[in-house]
Image (cartoon, rainbow, N blue to C red; front, side, top):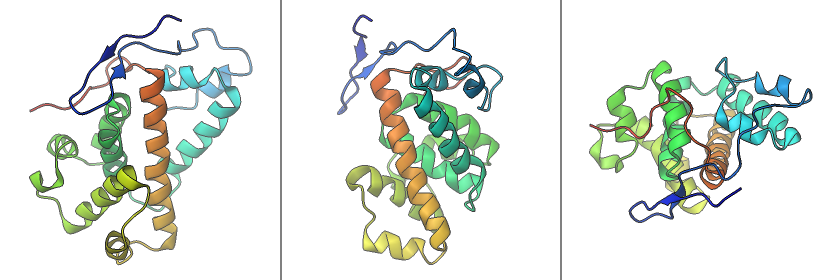
Amino acid sequence: MAAASVVVMANDRPRPTAPRIAPVTDPSPEVAPLLGTNLSDDPLNIMRTLAHAPNVLKRFTQMGGTLLFRTTVPDRERELVILRVGSNCRSVYEFGQHTVIGRDAGLTDDEIFLLTRPVEEGAWSADDRDLIALADELCADDCLSDATWARLTTRWDDQAMVELVVCAGFYRMVSGFLNSAGVQLDAGVPSWPTR
């Protein structure tokens, strides 16, 4: 495949503007059933790109499904973390997909926009600020500070802390894959929010 062109973002490594790995359009009988395990009737571009590695796709959908549908963390709080990670990673695909999911989970368009801005610009509750700090610290240094950990554990038990940290780490990995592979937005999915 030819080299993808890139857009240069301020203070950021350029992101591909075209797929570096073309999404699978004619899946094998082994892969086809795996592509039907997402939130849409049509396979998402991320799934069709991961389809080049069927074993990865299978485990990816299992882990992603667990984090989205089978944890103790409420949907709104989970999406706050995922969107902040997507913003920190400058992953337009991740941010766009989870804008839709985040709205369904109760986040407002204003809150979604503010997740792309410095935390001080939003009128976040203390609990929301702690979740934003979790995403920011994991993206910056792969470790939560003692202060952030202490604040979070006044609200979240050990199970939820595992779920939150794994969720942030998983979506950081996903964002890196999406950015690197040049996975393009699916039809109808929003890009970065604007005001």
